[in-house]
Image 1 (cartoon, rainbow, N blue to C red):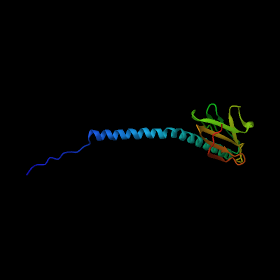
Image 2 (image 1 turned 90 degrees about the horizontal axis):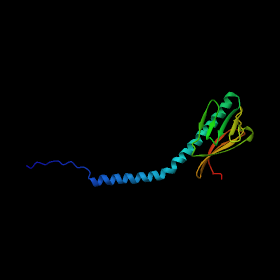
Image 3 (image 1 turned 90 degrees about the vertical axis):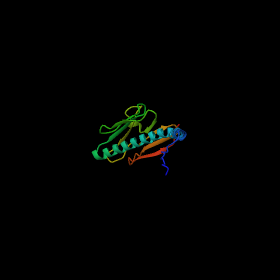
Image 4 (image 1 turned 180 degrees about the vertical axis):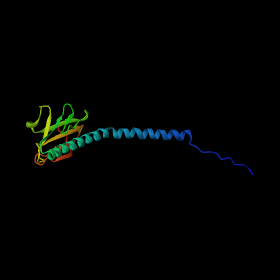
Length: 154
């Protein structure tokens, strides 16, 4: 009876090179698709952070019974809120502030004041990148903070 020798089967060099080439092509396509996506994620994330801190400022005014101020500096890309909260907006994003001139600390800064009853001076912070913009709107009567996609102002 003849003895059979088991041969281990593996991948040929050609098969391995084909898989590596397919991975490389998929990677190049993914980078092309996601390249603009990362900036848009950064834009939306920054807008959400601003909205959350504006809501905190309103809640802090209600809790303390004293007016609270949220200040944004579009030139320095920074913001300050109550209770030592502060942060920054990535330099790659444009910031446009619209609000009551009477409460602005300086001409190059914007401010929204929340009162102890929840009302505010109102305003809008628009963050934009390319043709995409997100608006953080604060209603003056209720102090409600809304985040929504907006049109880029020219």
